[in-house]
Image (cartoon, rainbow, N blue to C red; front, side, top):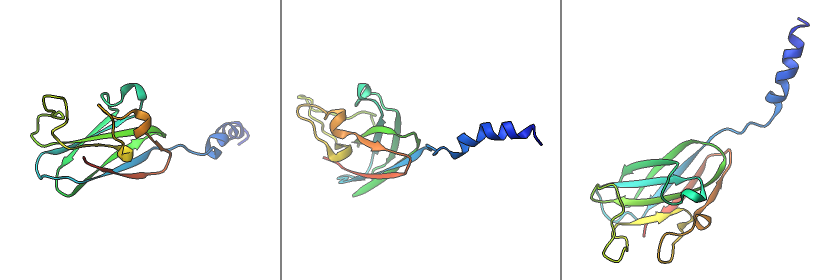
Amino acid sequence: MLKLIPSCVAVLPALLAPSLHAADLSVEVRGIAHAGGKIMMTLIDQTESFPNKPAKRLMVDATPPAASGIFTNLPPGEYAVSIYHDENGNGKLDTNLIAMPTEQYGFSRDARGKMGPPSFADTAFRLDNKDLSIVINLH
């Protein structure tokens, strides 16, 4: 019995410390203009990767007027979400001759860029150890 006491004392701080568990991020996409194709969602967790190197991706059916998806098991941190409606299924955001998107798109915090995508700082939000829901409106 006395041999167990040091082991219990060593484990006690870990049990008493607040736990930082992973959280889920629910994303609702509003303003889907056309049925068909997929809503492509990308979760970004670093400013250096925004918006081209996502930490996670989701693909959900595009059903007007809204769709939703859930990024699961995320550690606390700062994140951003980028979305586009891949109407023709080619796996990319289509643009016209002057590089303007021809498919709907959107970003977390409904951020909009000028002559390109918005910055990470304009789209970022904090995810703590509680589940979070956000809404993104397509443009």
